[in-house]
Image (cartoon, rainbow, N blue to C red; front, side):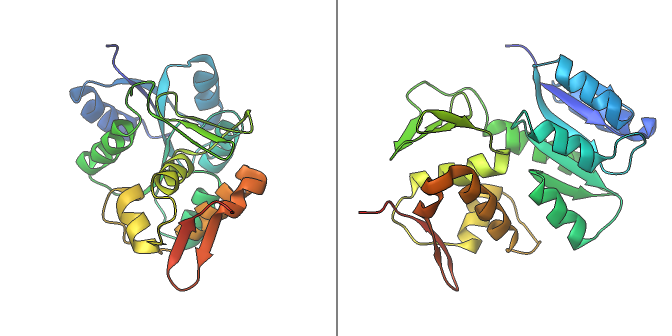
Length: 226
């Protein structure tokens, strides 16, 4: 099997080399970009890119702009790197469809662990791994979703969240349980990030978004109307 390709975008060559060296040791192929415009050029020209590691502060186009452009056409996972520790930045990233958010300085080993956790859940699965419910078709193998036959673009976390809801229909799910099972690591941020993802997921599902019901003071339940 060909090595999975990861696009590393950072205007600091030293940082790109550090991240690349750790990824290559793990068997990944790495493409590099030093600014936002170069990143989009590479991404648009290479359909093999499986994940993007994206710095926020860059010349020409910053990370927010690059992520926004990517999300208009693709649900490829995006890990955002930032030198600032600001909750508003983190919430903005989740609004734009960022899947992971890591503040600098960080451990390259932790970054690689996050990469592997995401890609592990997007590995090749058998065709029987499909979930269908009231016009919502979720294809785990292709990592695609359609509603009444119309494809919709979800971010990686939105896809994982919808998968979790469909696999646990009718069950009350607390925010803490959702974080533990969907984010798949010890998350120390605000649990309200789930509310942000649910809001966007409901919007993208259209009328089907009503199936995601709020349980006040606890979390959510995916339940089809009788």
